[in-house]
Each structure stands twice: as C-alpha cells, then as structure tokens.
Figure (cartoon, rainbow, N blue to C red):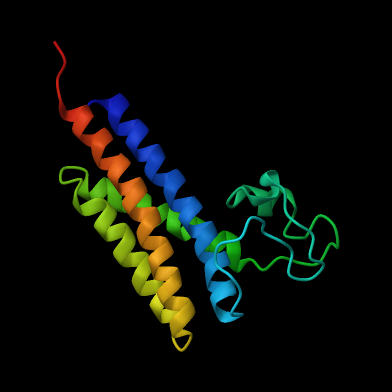
Length: 158
C-alpha cells in the first residue's frame, strides 16, 4: 500500500471511529431512556437546546465549549469525549494491526461496537436490538466503501 493510500485510509478510520463513538454515546443514552434512536436533531438533555453541527464535532466540540452546554451552561459529562476518543483510538489501532488483511477491519470494528453496546445496555432488549441494527447498517455501508477503496488502492495502474 502506498503511503498516500495508507494515510487516507488511516485518517478515514480515525474519522469513522470518532463519528461512531459520538453516535455510540447518544445511542446508549437513548436506549436507556427508551427514546427513538434515529432522530433529526441532537439536544441538550437539560435545557432541550437543539445542537448545531459545530456543537457535535466529536471531542473538539466538548473542548471548545469547555465541557458545558452553550445555552444553559450546564456541564456535559466527560464520558462523551472519552467514548469518542476511545473509539477513535480503537478504530485507528485496528486499521494499523490489520492493514494487510483489510476484510478483518470492519468486522473488528462492528464486533467491538456490538459487544460494548450489549454490555452497556443489557436489560433494554428492544432498544438494544434496534441499536445493533443501526450500527450494523453504518458498519456495512462504511465497511463496504472502505473495502472498495482498499481494493482500488491495491490495483496498480499503467
């Protein structure tokens, strides 16, 4: 794999990990509250303010907002950026470990997410089933694109 291809795929892995981590925190909260998993907007659970796109950037938004809601100034738990950062690091590490066998990468990503969601949301079976389905679709879509890019990067052009 050429260094450019490697860099692009590695950055995509990190980006996908942070996005999945951000959604994982939201999904876990919503499953435990029996709230819908797929909604148009994210919101502050204290004041109900609908978050803008800039307020939802994994890890960076929490740092920029100094761990507080921009509107009501209530603290946002540090668990959210920790989850997002953990997913970012895990997805990047899996890419580095399995870059020679890329088919394993999306499988490891989804396996990790599924096990963690099952452990964190046990007892909320209906919401857990919906959450696993949503994460499976996300991983199938991104994993498919990821594997196509890996295949294209391995073909040498004349």
